[in-house]
Length: 292
Image (cartoon, rainbow, N blue to C red; front, side, top):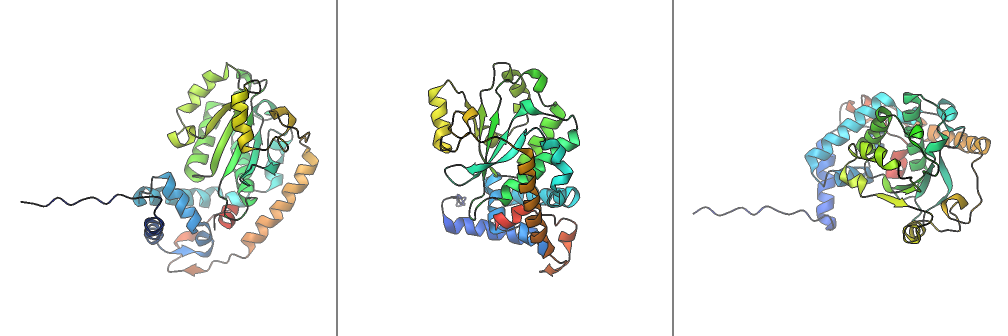
């Protein structure tokens, strides 16, 4: 008679098992440069493991693909002057308030789209993600998206190519960065566009989407539970009369750019643990600072 070997079951709530998985992934990715090691913090590795249900092999593949993308795209080198034209109408910006958990809030207004540049729009999204991450308080890994669809028509629909790439960037290179997203006042016609882009969304992302309607009291309770009405802008059903000012926001972003430059200026091409594998894939970002 052969005895059956019982498979061990991973429990993500078990601190010891989590630590073992993190250490296993850390060993699997091998030697890192100083910059990449800063990106591959314990919090970062945890996010990649969570995104792949704690499967180390799949997490390693996802992380390596992210590092290669960062080495090529160099998101931490994008500066405000590179993308400011995309922000002139206030179509996407980091709010000056946080949600109840201290998470950064990124406000998006698709009806204020002002360019037709695929590359420019994707680059602006990456900059916005990096900047939101830079602003996260210590210990906080996620952000909130507040997307205003008031007045939206199919004429405002993002081209499928751009929507697909933006979705890919968020899901593949910024895993577990989105805490929740509120789609505010989407019109009936939005359903058609949503069905098209839903195809590109993974189940984890879909679970984070909340459809909220100003005239629907129950859905508004969900929004208020996340963001205090006192800080929520009036147009989202709150009591904050704040409005986007491009000149003021530009000054804020230029200050943040200095923080970014300062953070990476300390990184020399020193190597820990071995050969310089990460000089081909080292480009972490402000993520590193807040993922640590």
